[in-house]
Image 1: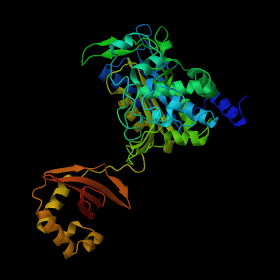
Image 2: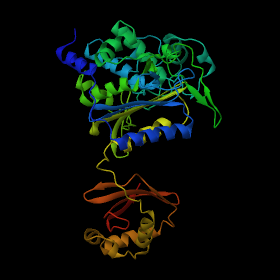
Image 3: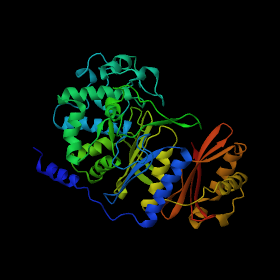
Image 4: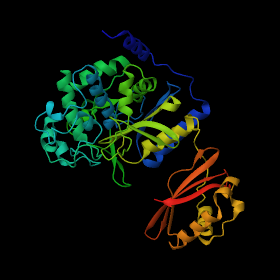
Length: 463
């Protein structure tokens, strides 16, 4: 029996709400974007879903799904590959809620014989810091994949090799780690991986995915290759068993859009599980790349994005969630070449989402920066280029220190923006990496907006 709150979520998921449709102009722009991208890249088809204001507003397919399905439709299930990892990871979080395991359990508690099993935790399997060697780093199918395998076969060949590094000290994508994690999930749950995920996630949300190995055949999209700029060719899928808990699913874009809406609303599952999945992993040296437990969290193009990609033989997928906009964009293609999924995702983002408040359409002003550095080095800074506050800051003492210290460095040999311009305090912040021979410095600037706004701050410091 579902608990009342979960039952309500299931009822709502059974009737996915659709908001006002896209405007005619937005729809036409999306169609033009996708069709042009497919034409430019040779990708046979794309299937997309768009969530705006927490509701599905578009589900549409374009192009050829397979040699037997000349016209793609939005109800076709595409292989999502590594986008499956977030479901495997969430399954383990739910098992922790049930008291059946802890993500901080060592792997050896559940599976004997894994390299480093006494030190690797389940959490490190999910955040890719375990040190277990990845069994599929290639972007093509290697010979062994033409023969069927099972999770234990992958573990025996790759998870018993020496670790690539001490667990927790580095980040390295590892499909092997997710196969191990899937085996632990099945032991703790006492049922097959797909059965557990269907019972806990898919059925309550009205999702209807299938095992990826069952989607290589009639009635499903066919994967395609392209070698360099040669003809687009049908891809031969790998034998059964290779992706499993590292990429076990095929589904429609609408399926994963329902999952995205649950993420946006913090519904169906405990809030702390959503938060735990999205929290960036901090390595032992205090650094992070934004990866959590099966998803990445990052600020890109002025937006907070929770996302993941996926690649199987002949397929690419991209799922991007925008929490601040209550939005999501799902793009599946039946080709494992080109950057079409990224091009379409970014293009739809520009079409259907409001511009982020922190987007700044400002040039980096590198010529102005060069001129200001040369003037400071020579002690001839033009004060008309400074605001009142900057004029106050650049006292004779400050100018003297700049001139004396900078003149010793020799000519400026490198000037690169350290990131995009951004707004702060009514000014445009631009930071730069400077090189003077072998010496690296950082420049932090604030300026009035516009092509040649006056400098509010111009600080050079050690890198």
